[in-house]
Image (cartoon, rainbow, N blue to C red; front, side, top):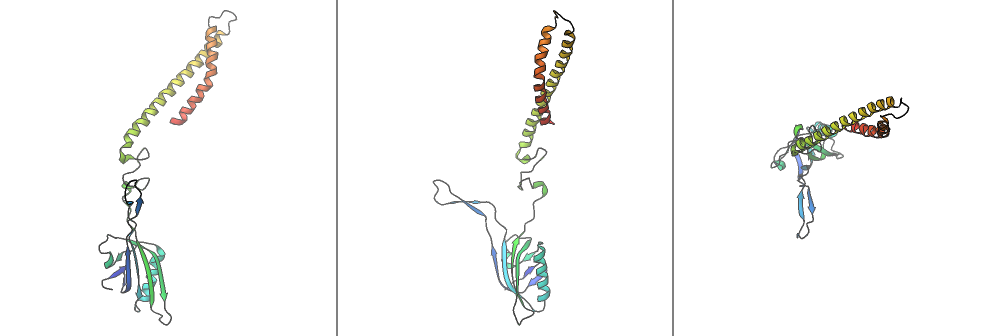
Amino acid sequence: MAGTTMIGDIELKAVHWIRQEIDQGLAPQRIPGLEGTLQQRLGRHSHRVALAGLLLVDTSAADLKTLQEKAASGEEVTFTADITTALTVEHMVIESFAAEQVAGRPDQYAYTITLVESPPLPPPAEVGGFGLDGLGFGDLGGLGDLGFDAALGDVLGDIADQAGALTDALDSALDAIDQLESLASLASLTDLGSPLQPLTDKVDQLSAVGPQVTGVLDGLRRIIS
């Protein structure tokens, strides 16, 4: 074949054929009332290249060993061929590799190789929790680039402030109950006609509510802590 075909630093001089494939990753969508099927483009798949040929006698053993090592390692390789001139393909990986040796020809090997494009990852600052550009997770756990972080932060801040205020109010109420219980204890020291008897009755009612209030308070503390 005309042109130079190379995998890494290996020049393949006796290539019989090369096939290049592009799959746009289209998903057909049926639209009511639309004649035909809408093709939604989800993003193309990696470019694929398959080729077959012979390794020449003078370097066949060394080239075979190198290709086997590259295929076994799974590491990225550079690929150059006329068939990919119009494509932007920087790095590929060897998806599959097969070699054949014909009896009576000890230094001649036939091979079939399939390579798949391996594009570089985008910068970390552009990779979000779902692997998508513009969906980076910030201090609040996500969606910063969509403008939700500030609004969500304000809402969470208001909730925390209100919960803190409610906690303070419940603490004050429990302190007041403790003080009233102390006064009621003093009032009970008198036998008859205590002017604080109504207060004692109210304290008894509040004391029954106290454990319920304490449970609510504990729950709030767990939520905002």
